[in-house]
Length: 101
Length: 208
Image (cartoon, rainbow over all chains, first blue to last red):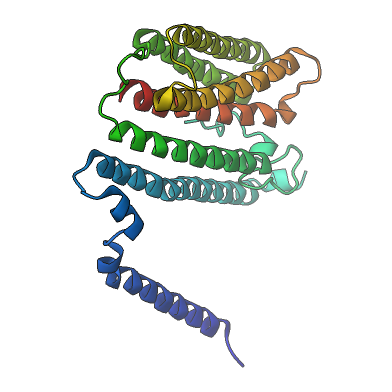
């Protein structure tokens, strides 16, 4: 009969493999990704042009915002969940007289 | 940013335990999740607008373009201080909510609404002056980006002020109870967001 530990081990292994494959795909394609968009390169031309520099700044800014939002909102949610869990443990474990009211 | 409510006892709808026992509320209430989703959507909206502004601002030779008025820095600095002061009064209101102090809550909410209205009034006055000096929405990229960014923020502040005035009326009335004060908590979150947005927009549009 399969044990519950086997399933969690399989899941953990699967997660590790998927993460490793994703990271490899990102790292190995760095040279390709660094070429940038062909249309942008044609339109803007020289990288030292003020338009090119401002476009790059704008793209970096817009690219970073979803990650910043995800990290901040996710971090806040994780903090609230952990604090809520601790509070439930404290109220249910340390004060049995409140539960019996 | 918001003070911890653990010392005064958390309100049930904010994740605390309801009086008399029973299952505790979720760690994050639905209202807070909704407000956070709204803030995320608004942040992405302003991100795209700021992204376009960065491109136009960086690519232009001179900013403001010749013949157009410069933005009023001194008055806007004072206006920024007014908005930041409203954050302090809102923190006081939130503390009064946690401490279940109705008198301090009423005064703090009223002060916050007054400061928010003052901010909008000063902004409106400055815009009228800028229009008189020739800077309109149709005055090229300079006018378009300025009025779009600052105008959109002004609309958000107006919505927050209207919400706050409605809450101020409820707090003064007989139907407000501390058990059902989630709306004030959510309004406070939105208010802090709007003030934080100004802290980003002001340097980007006025100082950059």
